[in-house]
Length: 231
Image 1 (cartoon, helix red, strand yellow):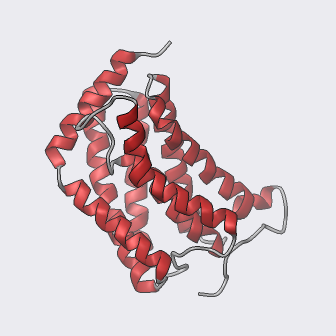
Image 2 (cartoon, rainbow, N blue to C red; image 1 turned 90 degrees about the vertical axis):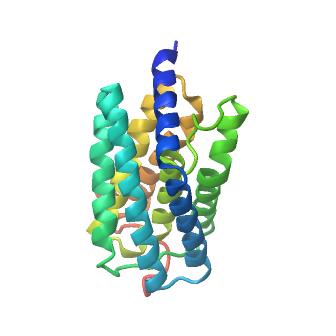
């Protein structure tokens, strides 16, 4: 049913990349997590700029990771993933100059729960699922683009709809969700069931766009909003 040879090639590639960039991605990923927690507790323009900056650096590393996969695996899914993550990296850089919204937990319980759960899952539970399924370091995604993608979508959904006319955040959520759906689908199809959560996170991102963002106007002239509109 699954192409296990392709999955082995992907895991071997991830293992080589982990060895090559360790501990850089772990250090930067950890800083991003700390900054996100700080933004949850103390939302501010400065904290938001800091986390955008570190996410931009981190997604620069992700682009390198994706390019290595493309060079060695020659798969259309990875070509698409490179394009998507280059866009994400550039948007995070661009968004540093814009202070349209502040990262922080919204008042609505359902969005608050989603954000916290996705952050915890991406950082802590994702690698535990891999280990439980028998995968071992370095052939696992630890603070890599799948779990960090889940984490990033969890962060963005708390912030984006507070400024529903923000094209920057709309584009970020679209690209992050698209990357999750594309790469998550590909990994699941070749037998990486552990990446089903990445695919689901992309679906959640698109749902947020449809339910709360500008895209909701396709179905309702009065777009549903949540969170504070004043910073």
